[in-house]
Image (cartoon, rainbow, N blue to C red; front, side, top):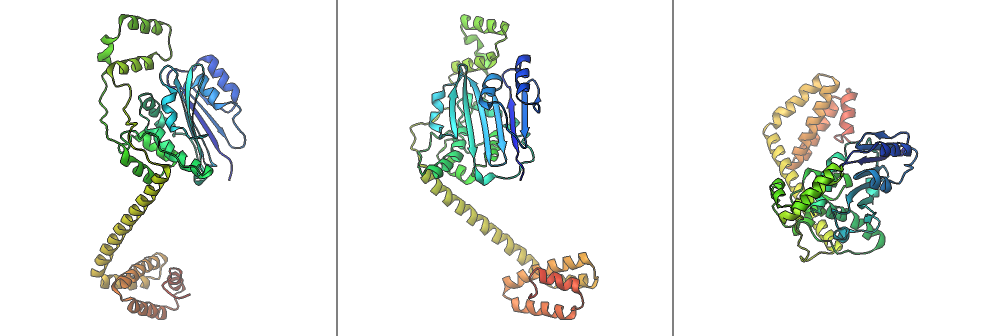
Length: 373
């Protein structure tokens, strides 16, 4: 299996300057670059730059994936808009980390899962649907962080033989956005584990924002400051204004009940195992009922199906033989369901005798186990 690595960077708050574009181009001759995006693909070598440094200097979000099970997404936030300490409960060593620079807070979700090793045709298209998660995090919606913890913690626990206490459970885990669903698919997070964890997640209505109505609430000094920053082309002005207006609305963050009882990872995994078993048993029962309904319907037209079998055999053609064998398989299942398997086997033996000179038919019967080898 050949190697495949995919890096994609996106600039969200502002486009790249000419100097920044020149810097990005200097890192690789194979970069696909626009004023807001950079893509690097490698099949036999590695990225020469430092992804985190490049993110800090030029971009706001990065996605990385490789076909040995590596999945990574990094978010960069202006350090004036987020407190890195509120993210600490979701840390998992080497897998979910936060670092700070002179101007940024960088959240790094970097997970290697050997269970998802396999061929990747292309990494394109994954990042675009995950971009809204950055704004979610700025609003205090930590569902993607909690979901990342559900993926990372069992891997780390297995490697280090350590149990964890789950971090605060965000609200609305039972009502996931398309971006969160794509996040789950990207990291291949177990949906039974999510459903188990979500039983402790409260439902919280997200009210529509009318931030423009709050502009008069800004002080004269603040308004003047924002206008000066417009003149100076401040890159993060828009987001900082939204942040300030949300602060004035009293809805800066989605509330999390940090005092709610928390489960250990081992408890969650036991509950997940029970949930998986119940789901599988339910699916098996549904399949059994569907099979019974199908067989009951077949029983009503059993004689006609036998007639069709012989009509198809009489055509002496490949496709009719295949259809006849398919009907015989259904009739065998019906015979087994009705307790008439010996009668069915006697009919098959008679077909074998009557059409012994039809090798195409006989070989098909043997292939599907209707005849002894």
